[in-house]
Image (tube, rainbow, N blue to C red):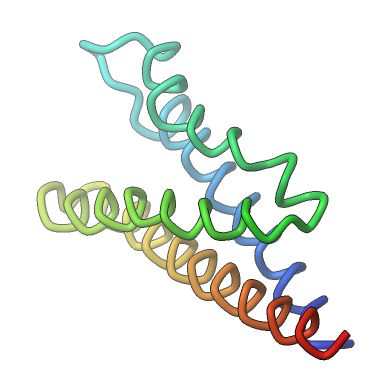
Length: 119
């Protein structure tokens, strides 16, 4: 398997992991009693849906924007891990998925750039 395919598959896998984690975190594990679940889904899960089409089609620009977007989830995971010990395991998973997603997007962009230069 080429490095570009590996970066693409890890991007898609980390995206789906982060998507499912935020979906379950907002609805099943610790739904907020003060904030409606629908608003939590729009705020936390909604932004992940924006680059999905571009990621599935392997567009470089979508990978760049996803690497910037995922930094928000990384910061959220750090804050939640620090602030609420009861949700630390969920925050740790969010941190791991966001690091994997960021790194795989970065490597996909770099490898696709190299491939386009050699073509």
